Length: 81
Length: 81
DNA sequence: TATAATAGACGCATATATGCGTTATTTTAA
DNA sequence: TTAAAATAACGCATATATGCGTCTATTATA
Image 1 (spheres, chains in turn yellow, brown, red, green):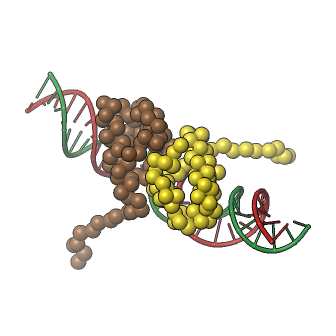
Image 2: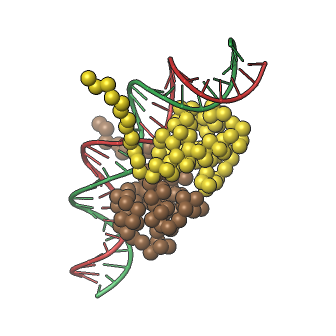
Image 3: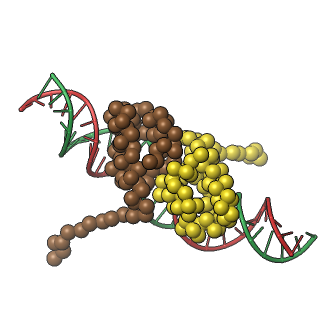
């Protein structure tokens, strides 16, 4: 009958770090008074990607991190608490 | 006749940051007196990947960066000069 | 030298980040 | 409560990071 519920969990490795990074980006973005769209435009990173990053859904690359840091007027170092 | 030479350049975006990161990893690894293989084992990152990272050939993810930082007994923050 | 240790350089498969677009949901303000 | 703004959540294509293995080249040491 197959009426059950299903859940899938993928990509567990260092998952807490990824979540924490997303929260940090969100926090920094708000401190600067930017919307996700503002940040997307400034950093030249797609809006949908900003969302995925902040929700901790993706394992962001250093290149994207650098684009975000620059848009937030921070050093790469300061992206990390 | 097509006897010329060809060269391909890919993935230019933030390329200097990627190079600088590789150099930083190499420097920190040597400071700790570790071979690439030592670091690969400690961080549970494939040896070939350590090489690619140090040579600036790959756009490393935060998850891998965290594994490296931990193996080097550093914070993620300190992976950046 | 030679030998070992280390690093570089491939090739290949798989997983997934990115990039772009669209629609739904939630939040904020009027 | 309604409209607008912001964010979430999809779908899909493409590029590429990772993971694993193997082989070559370089460097250090006996």
